[in-house]
Image (cartoon, rainbow, N blue to C red; front, side, top):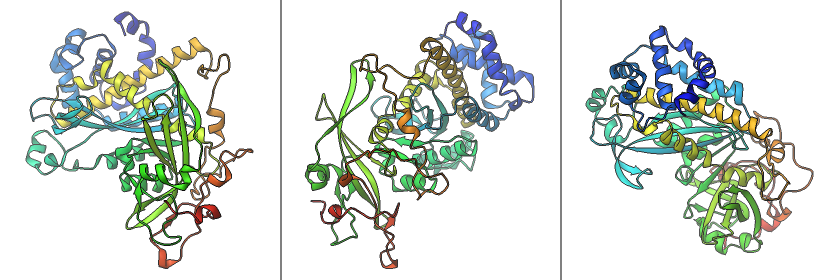
Length: 467
């Protein structure tokens, strides 16, 4: 934004920042919050503390102290961010998107910095890693960063003297990124945020503890899986024991997939035109704790314009959820990429030059505040310009809006008792032979099997092996 635009939004910005007034005991740090947010929203080429302070006519030490040592309640501010989203932007079909981001840094003094894979540079690099939870409306028109957390590598965890030098509290220890993501989800739920779906990339999907954590929280999900993830396309305990095989192998050679014709689905519009993928699907089971758990949906998707581009997804969606909704969620990770892009290019997310942990954590949090204001203004201007909620599609004057279909599937099946049962569509959404069901619970002799629901498997599925 230009200075004129920020000044023009002065009343809106003042009212917005007033929502966080009770996080500060004194007026001075409240004013510093406005200075920091204005600096992030402005057009400075670099949005670290010093240029933002100088542009505002204050000493750089003023903002350095605001991040590192001033007395204000960052936990309360984080809660306010989430509750503002619930109050003003709640969507019963909301999607939570989990992702991580690398921030290249030199030296070894910045809290959490180490040599690790950095997506920003595409290689093993010296960087700080952060984990993020994004909230997006089902149509993707409102999206904001809901939580951002520093990842502490094991090399830091094992060197507490180094941690103390960077002011990392003793209770901040190494946790895998998927554990951090689940903690973010818990904080969001505790503050009233409700997600209809959770989605994440294949790194998270191949962590059984992460999938188990989503199920324990009664969250529906669609997760991209790596092509070599071992699975079964039949109940592994229903007959002769067979080993699991890579998803790619089963999708290429199994009867359950070979007998299906490809079905084409319009995903969304892009700058290059409509994005169309063709799919096949079947129930699948996953190895877990020496046994098997299932069934899930396995969706194999192939780019119509580039058949060599193939993706694989699993979902715990209950029977009756339209496949178009599952695909919408599966290809719905772009909002977190846009949020990270906006925070890095527009708000200076990676421009931090602070080294201690409290200052870095506060920088991540204030960037969320700035991004929420930006998201609110973007949504307001878009709504004012379009006068509606439905995006244009490649079908001429016809508008493609999947919210109506998704609205019928806000709840999960009877295996998730905390929510009401699904309102199934009147028309079947899948060919009957390909509709996933599960076996009834096993006896104690087969207690390693963890069924998700109790409907019987179709007879044709029982008779066919994976290959």
